[in-house]
Image 1 (cartoon, rainbow, N blue to C red):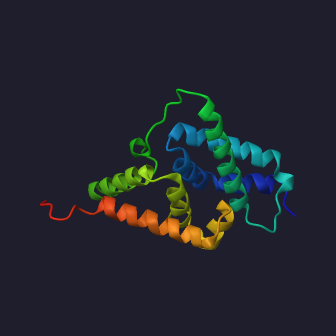
Image 2 (image 1 turned 30 degrees about the vertical axis):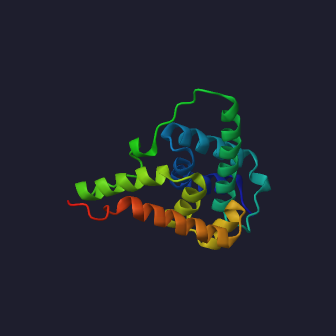
Length: 169
């Protein structure tokens, strides 16, 4: 049986992962922070509905994704919402050396250009470590669709990151 204190503690430990996924969805640091805050508030309000036999992270990721879907629907009505491109964000950039930093910035920039249908499953598998089956359950789609989208996303990223044929350095 989960207690409110245990639930809060587990939720707090998930914050970095939630923020990474929110950045994938929103492509904006400010929007990602707002989305994570809203998802956590919802999870805390509805913690009694959580089934402790199921993984907490999947439950909260689904709340976060559903809230983003609702927000994007609301934004279609509103106009003028500024967005900060993910490539201008520094949350996912490694600081080891300049080559690594440059490559990480390029990957982040290119992931942000992918359609959400490709970037969401890609980030859940590659960044969060979910299995294809877990992503299929989380995103409520067939596993074959998840596999296809991840393949397409990787193929597009590979094409974007590899030098053009015949180009000289």
